[in-house]
Image (cartoon, rainbow, N blue to C red; front, side, top):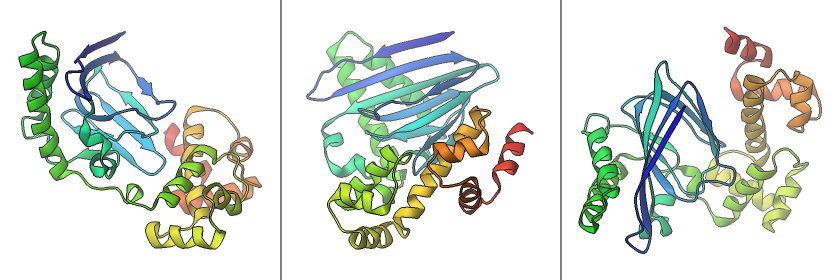
Amino acid sequence: MEIFMKAGKNIAARSLMAVYSEYSGEHRFEPQNGKIYNSFGYIESGTVVMKSVFESLTAGSGDLIFIPEGAKYCSIWSATDKIAFYSIHFRSDLSSTPFWSTFGMQKITGMNGDGCGERVKRIFSLCGSGTPADQLRGYREFYGLASDAAERMKKSIYREVPDILAKALDYINENYRTISSVAEIAQSCYVSESRLYHLFRDHLHTTPVTCLNRIRILQATEMMKESSFSLEQIAAEMNFNSEYCFRKTFIRVTGTTPSEFRKKRKA
């Protein structure tokens, strides 16, 4: 069973929308082309595990989370009774400036004891009202919540990088299954391999190969959770030269072997 209600209208140059969602059992969500707006989410009941290429979080009842515009992620929800959460999507003038784009996907600490749930529900109620006055009050409530949240949010190092490096990260994220060399990544950004290595080292304290392998292993763990593919099949799917190379990289990234990882998931 799924309950899905929306409240909100475009009453300014940009939009604010409050959404209430309810599911029974488990629920999985994965935007195909990245989110087209920034979002705050308040979890009323249930738990969620969310993973993007560079960030992950686990949140539960009473938590407030933030997901930036353009984020590509997967969320897996579960609950013994029901999953229920409010989402506040916005594309205000602020979302077109660097301000919100500097924050990564995260659980916002220090908000769950600040009447957060009631504030979110007021926004939902006001945005769903038929009167322009109430909708404007909804905006007022939203900016109060957003400003309090922004003071507690952490900026992401992956969002404060030069444009060339951002392009490289996007290319890796979209083509990690087929990339055959660092030269290919550098060519996609119109820079030399040497320049690309310097950018990764100076801004992310890693290398293009390490970054690529981390993404591949994180995606491989999802395949291992949700399928019965052999390690050889997963290694080939993630474009590793051999199962041995896959195992070695898996241990380096996760600290455990693929077999041990699968055993823990089944336990």
